[in-house]
Image (cartoon, rainbow, N blue to C red; front, side, top):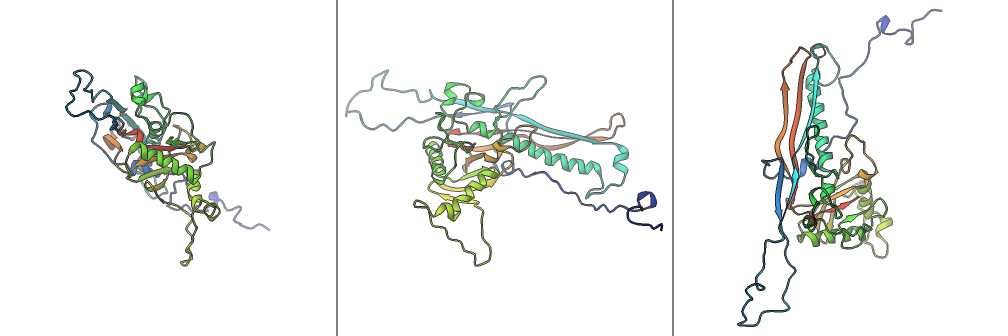
Length: 351
């Protein structure tokens, strides 16, 4: 018996489609470093520089005798001899798109009926992730040429205690790197970088890292820790009963009267200040690549004293371009900025 069914009544016979005006992005778009880092003075050259200086160790064991004269040559010091310039390059971040005239006129599903407007919104989100990945990278600064623009140095290169290139390409500049440099990244004291890929991050080792960073920066101002998802889980495990009630651990008290058990750590109160833990998916991201193990384990510890800031030469700008030739509307979005790290010795990192 012939019968019309849902299987043979197709669009040819007039079956309508049910396509809602919803559009869901399936890729991460949050940019916590770009959103939270303060802005400092706008740069006025392609290389933005600042001076760094150190202080001598305290000396009080051999005071001058009363009435003793200073030696004309040996009794005076050059107090600016150790100053060096650190700096970072201004990098251009840019994306562009276009929509043909007919494509802009047809009726399409989605929250925005204009494909040009939808393209602008998508490009702006992508540009923010470009910026976030750039400032969270381990990329060294580089001078551009006729084919490639200047590159800024990312935070995971600034906080590398073993760096010998980029901003730390001379021995004098290397004196101002983050503390460490011995290559030991197993959580021992006097190293501001911990290798979480080959070592287990424990509470004691995390405290050692904080102690080293405090000794390098000299200020208990609190910190922001931008952390990859694996590192976030590790830090949260510090509060688990299985890890916290050991002989040297703290007591674990869970208040679930409200029928809610909190299993996330967003703030750590430590001996050296409070640490706000902020999840991030864009640390150690290789340009053009997806999130990998390096990014999942990565962490950037930044003090809350404006030591790290963004220098923005041109804010994010949408530039509509003329329809030359009749191909359709086109536009580009761009920004020019760099990352300023005034005191690298106050930084910590987890890789």
